[in-house]
Amino acid sequence: MAKNILISRSLPDEALALVPRDCRVDIHDGPDALSKSDLIARLRDRQGLVCQITDTIDDEVLRAAPGLEVVANVAVGYNNIDVAAARRRGVVVTNTPDVLTETTADFAWALLMAAARRVVEGDRYARSGQWTRWQWNLLWGLDIHGKTLGVLGFGRIGRAVARRASGFRMRVLYHDAVHADQAVERALGATFTDRETLLRESDFVTIHTPLLPETRHLIDEAALRAMKRSAILVNAARGPIVDEAALARALGEGWIAGAGLDVFEEEPKIHPGLIPLQNVVLAPHIASASFDTRLAMATLAVRNCVAVLEGKPPITPVP
Ligand SMILES: NC(=O)c1ccc[n+]([C@@H]2O[C@H](COP(=O)([O-])OP(=O)(O)OC[C@H]3O[C@@H](n4cnc5c(N)ncnc54)[C@H](O)[C@@H]3O)[C@@H](O)[C@H]2O)c1
Image (cartoon, rainbow, N blue to C red; front, side, top):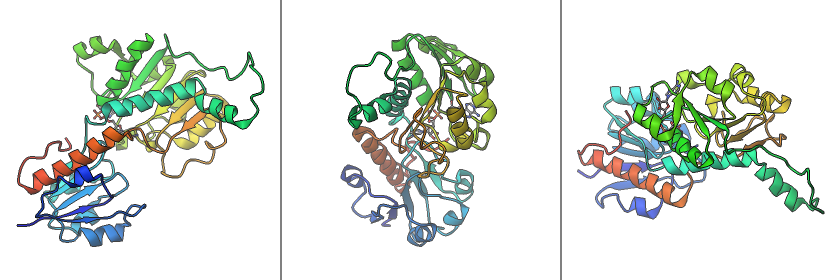
């Protein structure tokens, strides 16, 4: 029987070409995410959904699509999907792990380095016309090499970020809900610590946990006050892991030195307290946005969707 698939955002042609010819595909290609009511209306009578993190797939949406067999998220994080509700309804949920690990780790480092060495401030200054002579005391920043990197969430991306630290001869601390194997710790030169020690001793704290009830505001006022005044916080995981109002105060009042943020609590809104600050680098949720990786994510999501619709096991089901 021919299957119906909803694709909630336009995807590259190479990914769409993987949909079998006998499937009927409905693609939403507007610039904004589908509203909940449109999503519900267009999902009716569909067996497959390929969706993005901007689509909230909750029990109400799932209830409205009784024939749905698979929700294929084009992301590794799946906090936009009620996975328990999907399981209850027999709907398979898949994500796109691994294919974005290195690209996201690259970008966490880009934020770290940009914040430490004031790259964005330098760019603004160089363009502004104010640069009229070489200045000895212009835009001093923080060294990265030889410092301590603290990785919160030592999974695929956290480890890829840690691996890059060896080139900077850094000490690497990590904290995770799970202790890594000794062989992994040895290979990455990383030492497990409790969260408090990591916050207290790290010059750079980079967040790579999923967004879960227990990681919401993992970095709150107390955590920010526990960090070094010279420390930099990087968040390329999910916005609500950091209390953004507390971070704006921390940066404005000098509890920490700087931050690099790819994600925000209420995207695309950014806390107004962050906007005027020079010591924070802001990016519009683009950590996985390289040509190769976005194509790999789209391709994997479509392959997951098609596999389930063909009665095969999904390639990367969420755990
Ligand atoms: N900004 C972006 O564009 C972007 C891109 C990719 C991934 N992400 C985010 O990065 C997250 C991590 O991706 P990944 O592939 O490394 O996932 P992963 O599952 O491999 O790693 C997550 C790690 O966090 C740990 N963890 C879970 N709860 C914890 C807690 N309470 N305290 C400490 N550690 C905890 C897990 O044990 C695991 O080791 C994703 O969930 C996603 O939200 C963001």
